[in-house]
Image (tube, rainbow, N blue to C red; front, side):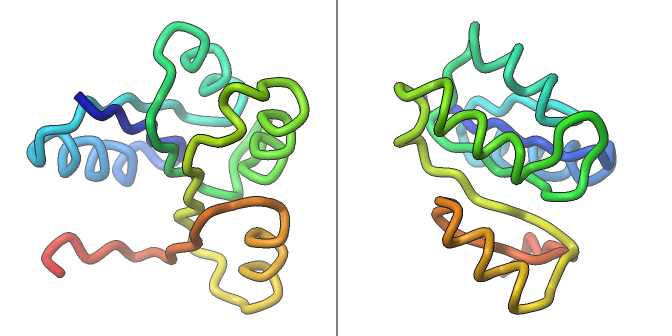
Length: 111
């Protein structure tokens, strides 16, 4: 089964994303920040990561950079930012840093 790791400090957002992917037949894991997600990745290598940018302890940009530098076997895993930051500059910076896509909140699960 395909596994998805949702990384977001907002519990409600994490639960909605995990629930939606689980209902679609994926194995879904969750972490509340980048540091927690690194610990989880060691035992549960995800097939895709969906990550907020603004989080405590280790934000999404720091997580992506750490994966690229220290976890080469994970560096090819699709990494999608899901964030409330809607300005074009932040989006371009995220994509230039290696993110595969950039989605903005709020999430519309119906479309």
